[in-house]
Length: 179
Image (tube, rainbow, N blue to C red; front, side, top):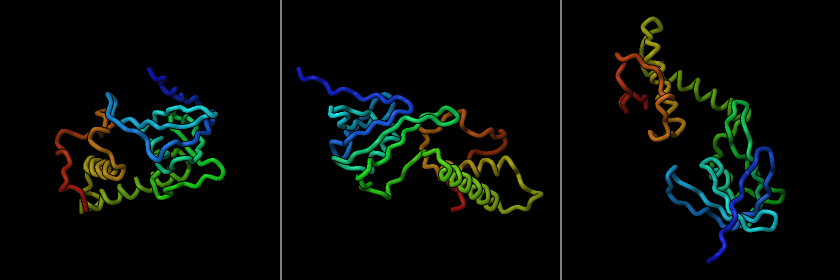
């Protein structure tokens, strides 16, 4: 019986320099959704990494034999994310690939700008004056626009994340979007 490849488990705050063994991970569907299995060399040993969706988004920017440093990090509010940067001498193979959920100043600023634009579009889409403004409807439209902007799927939304909307406000439809 062949020996299984050991799995590299990440600890917070430790940098793991790895070399990718293939251009793309093996993928499949499991109980918790899609999984991404990368084959890597770490400290001269063949190992496997099961990447989260966000770590996969970072690693898919690289190709076989690229050397990447992966670090498991924690935000101020206790959320986990992975940082993956090229080791010196490694080029990003697909620099235009999106990098998601990077909790740095630029992404926070960009997120704030997106929220402001969504609020403006939500108010404009109603075509009313300030005194006729229904704040519940503005909130519903803004959150609908953010839902589209963030590229969420209905399966990604938890019940507790949905806005508190009074019963008299109908649920949004595609016809409610201003574009």
